[in-house]
Length: 416
Image (cartoon, rainbow, N blue to C red; front, side, top):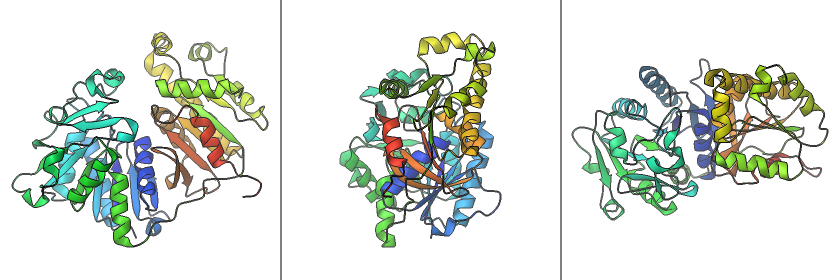
């Protein structure tokens, strides 16, 4: 029985959200976009997460798709909707968080709701309405110059001001216990509660957990799932993480975390191949040659990556930013699809844009969500092909030995 519906503004954000719902005890299914037809398995999922592409979509389309997702989820029995966006509040003055939240608040007739981008386990915290990344104000963090969603202020209320028709109020920790949603009245508004520690999430859910709409990063989702699981009186089933078959590792993120993970994997003596856009555009390297490299590794698991340092990325962009991005994403997607067609059962991918290209190439529309390799990075099992295990991570997520952990978690052992 589905009781909770979640709308995420991109795919890796959706898998991030789903992983915390599973950690909180719920059975979760993730669907890629709003299904155009009925698909199997909904009745067994306590929570359904819809992955949209609305983070950088034009605003009218983002609102339209988000409302369509809400109608789909309500039609499946959802009693509450959660709008999930990035824990770094990826946004510009023309961003979509405000317009989508406004539209959902109006559709669900919510008297108020919360803005909770915090995810303390990954260093994202909120105090006095200000969003920090590892203790640094958002607009001073390394993420301030994101090419699509530059982060120009750490004050959430100021980020919302040009986007939303409704006001924001800061709710400090000492005020939370005395607050009641009954105090919401008149025109809808947003509350920005302090959220610096894990226990803050549970306290926020205790106060606001019955609102028809909640919004934020994935930090609130584990305590929210625990609340629902307690009400339902049962925890959901999660799929087996292990499967037989070879694995392929793919990476396109240029984040510091992913670069460190690549260096760690290569340092263990594993086979690695770098896709060089300059060489590929000149015909000196082909994606077919990359596949030959993958196939030739026998029992070893190959890593194919296009990730590079900021300096090299700027150099490559002189060849044409869109041209290079399209080349690398399409090449990585082709490798993933070819691997699946040739019996590879484990596909592990690092990078949001890369993951989006890979999921599109694989063509699966629905996934059961399993245990997590790292916070926000679950094992996913396609409903259409339960043999496959897919792991997609946002660039900055995961430990240094992430690739090793992902392989160990999904490998079917002889005694299994």
